[in-house]
Amino acid sequence: MTEAGRADGVPAVRLRPVAEEDLALFRRFATEPGLIGLDWTGFTDPQAPARRFALDGWLGTESSRLMVEVTDERTAAGFVGWARRDFGGPTWCWEIGIALLPEWRGRGIGSRAQAMLCDYLFTHTPVQRIQAGTHPENTAEQRALVRAGFRLEGVVRACEFRDGRWCDGLLYSRLRTDPPPP
Image (cartoon, rainbow, N blue to C red):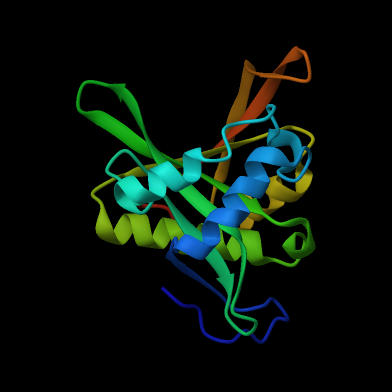
């Protein structure tokens, strides 16, 4: 899935499956404090991404990841992921997330990649709802989600344990029936 060249100064990006050479990037996110920003929850197993890649190439039925690649430079800027979230009974949605390397943040890549991921999921799965959460202090991600066509639903109180305390989160959603982002 590739985006054409952009006239607005935002680098063109594409989403592509994870390749073996991308595993080093996943190991960095697992072992470098602060690289993932506010989502750092402590060290995690640096070999877990390789085991998951060997299992299904990060393209599973319950959760998956795709690389966000800057097309002109043919370099991975980060990744997007999605996981199934159940509401009980037959009702479920996708919850998406993104992690970009610091040098690619603030350039419009995140909103483009998240909008492309939503288009992909709405095209290839029957889901009606896609949701994304972020931190109240992450105003850049809040703006990116709105640019990607998401709407703020509200505050999820004390939903995350981070930095030794319980923190609130913000929940955004995009429905299949919502107008596409500009």
